[in-house]
Length: 579
Image (cartoon, rainbow, N blue to C red; front, top):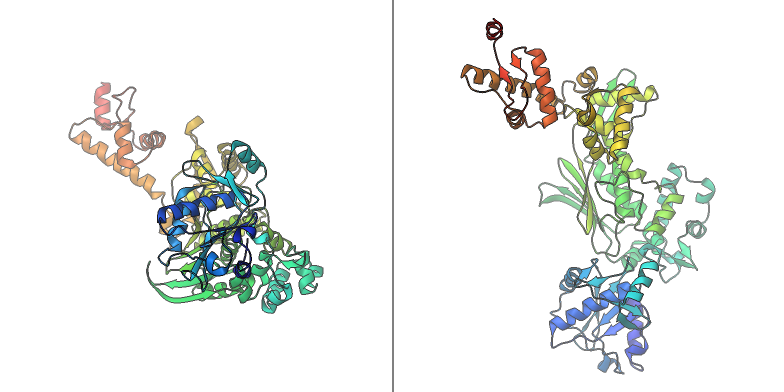
């Protein structure tokens, strides 16, 4: 990868030598085809694939690589060529998708502008959408043959953007304020004191952020000055918006700060509109915010740590009246999805940055950050975060849901008994406060476990903790929240949590229809008709009708076969029939 300043220096050498003599594994010069926009764009796509397969690199467009003399060699790129169009063309034409960074470089010769394409290391092989591709070998782009594909699959090379070093003296790029703030937050997390007492450059070396006398990009992001960050992270910015609607905002702040300062500034802005509820109940005294500070901290850290800094896009925080959205450029990495994020092994996009933060105890390698977010929200009876993978970005949404005082007290009392509720326990209890029952399949889905592990969780909550009661047998087995616990957790003031009324309402509706049909001397209800009336599944209808028959002897068993129906018959009718 070549910085713009280095490219400017190389352009001066064109006065005495051709550009192709300056080319290298990670650098190429290409002439722009003024006669055909399509051919020029095809060349851009071809070079993006070639460089990506070769480990990344820089391509300068607008140079005749055979000519000598700046005036003859620097022809430029037409002013109508839009770099956003080039970026889209590469993205649409590659598989897997490539998102190069395009930069304009002003020159006095030719059209007055060159276009520089930066291709960062990725996970090759890459091809076009028809399956064809090339790979950089030395100064040539060679066809990606079977042999080369096999080599690429084995030798993926260095892919960590934050692990690359930057030119210049580290001392000149270090922000004293960022270093002070970094030590402060690390000390709060009980990082080793002997580590934090070391001089700046010794500390950075211990964190693996200085290599061969040069600061890594991870170090620039962590403790760099704004000037250094702007130079080496040209696409980086954080933005906080106070939204008044989905499209308008009343207040905005942008920053290019080092990570610890950025986190502090963003947190201060969020907290200004994050009201506190004070709860006093017996021995317990809680001061609870709409958005728990732990959940906010983990979400913001994740956004900065897992952002794809090769992409030009902000770390964006939108604060609405009823929700908070935090997004960062770059999709979920390495097979992680919203459906497995609680379970998947951690896959850091920026290992050098994660390594340094891990040594400072600001993050961990065990993927606990997402679980902390869930736990902080669930113990207050609030909805878990919604995580959306949008391809080129990840968005985390916190809903401004109401605090459940009864639920928070329950969690605290259980903790006093040395019963620490897991994320899985909390998800299941919250589900049962909104639904009448849960089966193994549903529990596996909402807790992101296998069905066998979900069944173990349900059994433990039933037998060891006493929170649940079991019903049904075999595949029809289900669990409900113990009635007294349900009544306690569905306390007055939180009617939205009491969805159990739906079960009783369903029984009332079925009973009413059966009576009406009996009065009109019409046939009773089949299982399918009851499913349509109640929106329950087949097994749930069987259980519902069993309960109804116990409560109402007038309801007759349905019999067997396709014509089976539940009928309502008055007791007098039954007695008359018996005679």
